[in-house]
Image 1 (tube, rainbow, N blue to C red):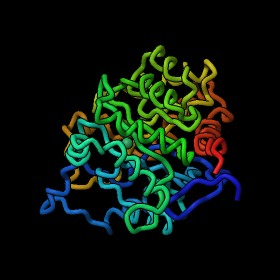
Image 2: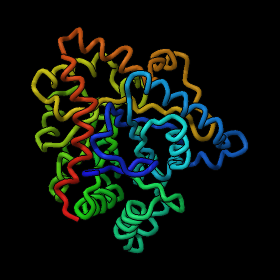
Image 3: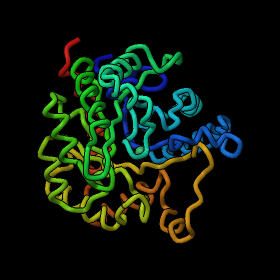
Length: 332
Ligand SMILES: [Zn+2]
């Protein structure tokens, strides 16, 4: 089969990936959601119903694969993803990893950090899931998820970066990140590349949280990929407006960086715990936060700006392939 990547239904050839959305959540919950069980209990059947409808809607736009990088402690549910995949035929890649210090569930590994074993423990967790699957499901993650805070990569977060670099070097697995409020993109790239990670195997996420071209160039210089992966998120979590994202994106595409950019929405399609109630004003500007928004609204705008179909195919098809292909540099 040649080079393969793990999906929630097993390995597929890289060539089978097709049009890919690199960052969407079928289900997500902020850690702590499980305590709100009386009002926000997880409804597997409802999450499945929503997930199937989302899968069908993106497949209608030609999407073959979705990467769902939900962190382990944010409600990651490989069996739900597997069921969505088998019901619809959409290929789904899940992740192994923990969220950033401010919004993750930190006490478990902080306790072990105090004991001095955490980095090794995290390394073992990654290797175990990649080799044998998540828990008893047999479902293997196809990517490692990392995350950092606003304006810093904390000591807690660095343990995950270090462990991930080591695992990447041993297994070839790719790495996808969360940056907070448009900060630390260049620093994440530097940390991983200097630790020996193949730049082509890295996607620095949420880069569209920053509209400063210099910030992007300083990240791209490391040879890594970047995600303009929050289209539709406006007026929340420190995000810029889509029209600003578009200006930055078009500038980078016109400067020849199309081989290092991927697009997505970072949608949450089913909230674990009670769904959030947004203020009316925010609700209005967030109305486009849907997994087909890129295809319905953003791509037409890119075309009007002179971006070719060929470039758009590079963003959605060629680049995801290369992100997962770079395994080839690792010899078993
Ligand atoms: Zn996300």
